[in-house]
Each structure stands twice: as structure tokens, then as C-alpha cells.
Image (cartoon, rainbow, N blue to C red; front, side):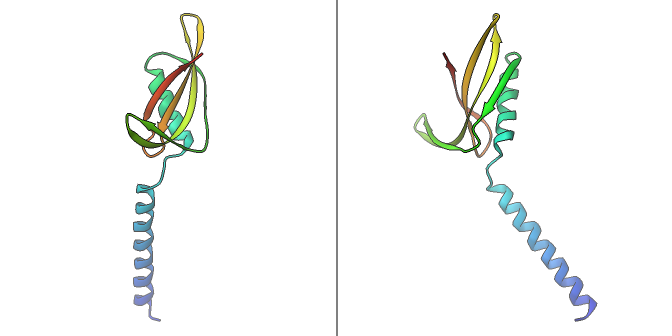
Length: 104
């Protein structure tokens, strides 16, 4: 095989790999760590947080008649000298916080 054909084959292979990578990233869920980071940033707008957690496996939930695939997590905040815990659901596709519940 001549060097021109080799270069052409390598270029086509690289281009196909790049396009495939872009397509996979477009349809891939965000990681639980990124969803937790987004949720913590959202909670920090209202004040400091002292702890956080997230389940690593997304679960289906329904909110306002819509179906979501979401990560469940939680944060602990100190409000008026008392620790308060909040549970949240973050969309596994976008990382946006869908719902927040104060736990007792």
C-alpha cells in the first residue's frame, strides 16, 4: 500500500472515531459525581452545606406527570444552629435538581 493510501485510511479512521465519540457523549448520562456537584452548587446558593451523599445508580421517578431517570442524593445544612437534612433527585441526563424534600 502506498503512503497516500495509508494517510487517507488513517485520516478516515480518525474522523470516524471522532464522530462516534461525539455521538456517544451526546446521549450519555452524566456521572453521579457531576450530578452531586451540581446539586451542591445549587444548595450553596442558599448557604453553606456540611455534608452530602448520592446513590450511584439512577432510578425512575415521576414528577408533575413527567418521567425522569434520576439520581437520589442528600445534603446536610446548618440552619439557625440546627442541622437539617434534605433529600434531592437530580436528572441523570442533565444533572438538574428535579425535586427537594426536607427529611425529618
